[in-house]
Amino acid sequence: MSFKTDRLVALFPEVYAAREGDALLHRILDAFGAELVHADTAVKNLLKSHWIDYAKAGGLDGLGALLGVSRRLLPNGTPEGDDTFRPLVRATVSSFIGGGTVESVKGAVRAALGLPYDLDLLKKQLAGPGGKVSQGILDLVAGLAALVQIEEFSPKSEVVLGNASPAVTGSTTALDVNFATIQPVPPRIEWRFTQGGGRHLSLVREDTGTGIISIGEVEVPQDGTLVLAGEGAANFSASIGTTDVTSWFVAADGGSPPALPDVPAGGSKWIFTAARAGEFDHSTFDRNETFDAAAFSVRMEWTRYQPLVFDVVVPYFVSAAVTRILAGTGYESRFKVFQGLSLDAIQKVVDASRAAGVRGMVQYSLSLPGESADKTPWEDHGALDDGNEKGTKDAGLWKFGVDRRGEVHDASESLNVGAFDSALEMHNAVEHFALGGVFNYSVFDGSFGFQ
Image 1 (cartoon, helix red, strand yellow):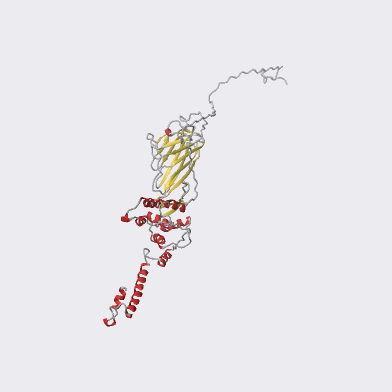
Image 2 (tube, rainbow, N blue to C red):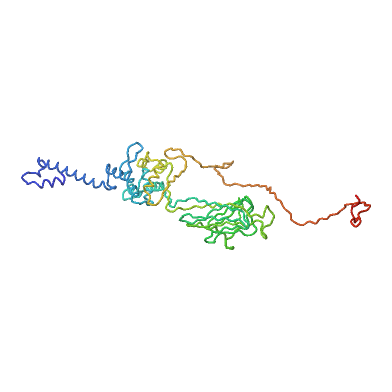
């Protein structure tokens, strides 16, 4: 007998014996009370169906339809249940209100993969009596947490190129750099000389005046590439091929240790200069120098950390990765990766859960540790050398030697410039005979005669 029946019985006088359980009237009133209870329950369920946390079955389907999501298929082809569909619907709400915290994006991706949305709640659900959590549960939660990673401020490699043609006073090129970033970093520079050798080099960031210059009578040879890299003075390095030439450089002020300027968040101009080769008091004329300036090309490369952009990193083989995490935990059958979910669909989930004005990109990780627990073949790229020798057991590779030999076939040309004396002897012999000539005209000192 329900409380509804009690209220109906109280409306009748005692003479009707409505309170007697075996009376016909009492049974009729009890039937009416039960229907009223069902009606109340239906009304309450209708009110709850407006809330994602309480909606069930068709009500939850209706909320999902409003948000544009539907139940996914389990491996056996049947639709998923409320317990896994509810987190997906909840994760989709943020796309309509501009939410999208780091944990909500991770939870949305996990929910899309058929895994728990809230790992803290999962830990409480799996806890034993008194809320005690075993080490196995902690390892399980840690594995699921590491399955989906978010890297804020996605790194992107930027490259700027420049060229300098020979000029009378030297060769110079200026690179304008203007990229948004949240962390200034030094670039890696490849400075290649395509015509003539580079002497008295200078690299300066115009807005700050910082940079490096070369010192002494050093030269980057023609077709040589000078590589500049490193963060700060302690890590600065300069090399030409395999030759370390860090000692060639000092800071632009002429005395401080060399260090590459950082690429700032805003705009900057980088000026590269090489002095004219055949320059008085600088050139040595002991190599293939000319009076033309050196022509060169410059390549600047650095990692830019993009604002308002993040990467979501998930395993490429999701099913195998989940199987490895669940292996031996006793919860292998609790979580299922949905067969209808493609890798491209994860990007749609990220787009639906990210915050307004922020761009999220899905990156897939590929690890090859051997063979997974579900016998999925993996490639093994591990190399092993047991190094066994006579009289040893499992010796391993414990020492090595390096032998390098080289031959030098350099060819050089020299041009001697100077003054040379010369002497000239004349052995010309002239013979002539003249009988006479015209008076007052002939001088008789040449081959002049009457003919």
